[in-house]
Length: 325
Image (cartoon, rainbow, N blue to C red; front, side, top):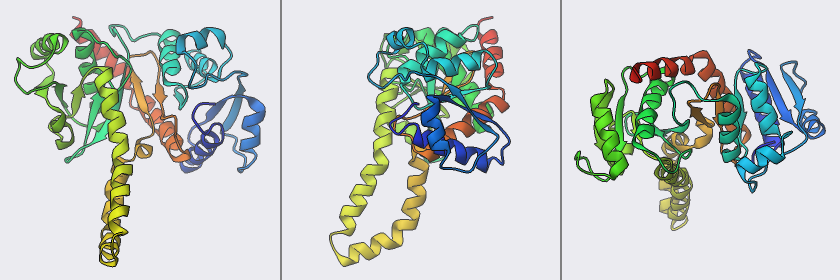
């Protein structure tokens, strides 16, 4: 029931995912049964899609922790509980981010050694992609939290992107080790003392240049960066359209360039990557954008399947054992 266009877009995206996967996995749609059945009736039936009834919905205006207590039969609470109880290998939602974070942390619990679960997001760069962590789960972070984000981010990139020994950078206001606030300076010392492939401090301009594979920051900064990045494709499309409208020559130039622009825009489109993973919980929780389209929902499901298949949580648990001695 999560997302601005639920349940229609969620159901359509699920149908697309199951069809494109040639039914290699099953999906349980958690929510108000009658509404979901109406939407499913618009598509060919599939034995790989089932429904688990949940009578309540946590909307975007609900306070996350309060909603989990007052709406115990919400689709988020029921879905995460099903995952904890082994009735699903992963949980996917485009609903209230705070509620998904809280439910995943409280119901699934944390991986041993993890102080705080974190959200990470893949961002396109000049040379490929980098992983931004934290992307919004933790607004205020201690040095230890930042260090753990780097550990988990490094594991995720190694497992999901296939990058051997990923480089890690700490986002700051300068490259020099003396630059930064109190938390980042102390975290820098921890990174330097670890066996990670630590690059050092990186600045905002270094992210899109692809200087490192993992960029570590607190969730306040990370979420601002992520939301800013999401606005870039629509900004360029608007500028491109305005350019083309000025003259017939500009319009012809725009037509010639359109194919290349479309390819570049595809890399920047959040729908291509689906959702962002919540790292550090005893389970797989993928969180999507509230405005997720069917395409985004489909790709969220694929990301969840890949996360499970590649055993990311097992690798994180092993890494936390090493860094904690």
